[in-house]
Image (cartoon, rainbow, N blue to C red; front, side, top):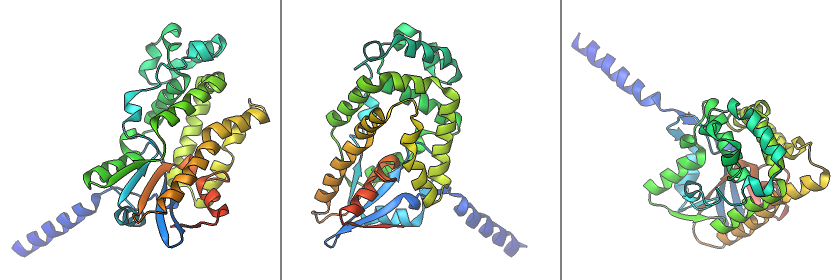
Length: 292
C-alpha cells in the first residue's frame, strides 16, 4: 500500500511539472548571417495570453545571444512622451472626432468617459493605440504577456546587455509625422469598432496560429485595406510607418554583424514579414536568412 501511494505521488508530481504553458513563436524567428557573423531576429506582437515559456528553438536562440535589441527605449511607452503632442484639435477635422465620439461606447476603456473637448487634447495615435489595446483585452489578450515583454523581462533577469534600434526622438518624430498627415484617417479607423475588432482578431490568430505562408500573405496585403486612401497617400503612409524605418534597421543589423557578440533582435512582426519587411530586404542585399 505504501509503495502504491508513493507511486501515485511520484506520478502526480511529475504531471505537475508539465503544466507549464508554452507558446511557439519559431515561425517568426530568423537567423541572419554574413561573413561568418550572425544574429537572431524575432518578429513579435505586443499582446498575448498567459504563458510560461517559449518553444525550444526560440529559447536556444535567446540563450545563444549576449545582447537583447529592442525596437525603442524600454520605458518609452510608460512615459507617454507624445500623449499631448500634435493633439486632435490641431491635426484633425471636427467631423472625424465627432464620428469617433459616436462610437466610443463600444470600447471597454476609460476613454468612454471623455467628452469631445477632453479627447481633442490627445494625440490621435495615442488614442488609437489605447482603443486597440482595449480590443485586445476584450479578446482575452494582455500586454503583460506580449512576446517582446517576455524577452525584456528574461533579459533583465539574466543580466544581458540591451540596445535599441531607434532613439526615442526618432520614434516620436515618426508618430508626430503620421499624426499630422493622417490624423483624420487614424480617427476614422478608430471609430469603426467592428472592423477594428475583426482586424485585431485576425492579427492575433495569424501571429499565434498561422502558417508561414499565411503570415507572409497577411503582412503583404495590410496596406491594401486602406481603401479610403489614394495610391499616393498609401505610399506615403507605408514610407512613414514601414519603409523608412526598415532602411535604418538594415543599417543597424549591418553594424551588429560587425561585432563579436550575438544579438537577439526583437521587433514588431509588421516590420519583419512581407515583401517590404526586414527579412525580404536582407535577402535582397545578399544576407543569408534562415527561418526556424
